[in-house]
Image 1: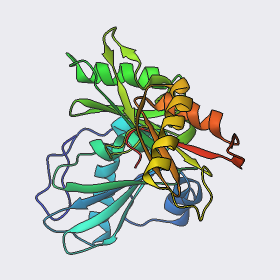
Image 2: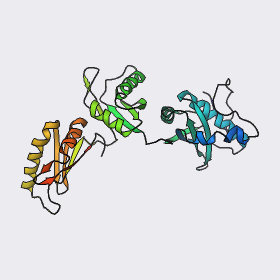
Image 3: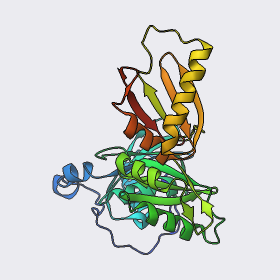
Image 4: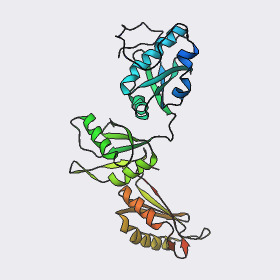
Length: 294
């Protein structure tokens, strides 16, 4: 949509579009603007930080700009309300866009565009728990990026609610509604074949860390391990942990051991099996970290 901020020359007016939010009136009343505010303010919200050459605090200009933001955001879902916030600096303000659906708020953030302003950041509010982004890489080169993102999002939706799936570079970013869903997909699909030949990799963070299982309680807290003891412990762990997947590096110190795997499922299976197991008379504590999670 062609829109501009108040403060710059007005863009040509577009034909009126149906919208569910309030109509603009020169004189607002409690019934026209504020009656529905409590429910709208609790709805999933995309907060976009916008930069413009100048801003106006005139009531009519604010109302006009909020209407333009609503029009720009409406392709992502039903907009309930838009509120322009105060100045963060001379050129930057935050706008809160309230949607009827969580997926619409998630989709709006990275894709929002509005003539006359530049988006410099975006965030989410009013979610029961923070959405979790999984990065799916090592995919075939797409002929149609949107189609590939949709296919990957569809596969991931078997394990939890997917709010968004979009291409970024050569990877697909899949946003899950819950951490549980993201972890389930990371375990099931990491290393799985995609389109017959490509073994995709799923990371739950931006770090380069490999999937790993951390094991504690292997030695006494005040016990000092010499090099020979560490070598012996690494050998024992390599033999025991190889049952759950391909083991990479194993690092041992007085706090415990970090056993790296080539896939998320190996780390998760190791943690599930080793938790509570007795090792040399001591109870083992185990936890898994997934690819990309430092």
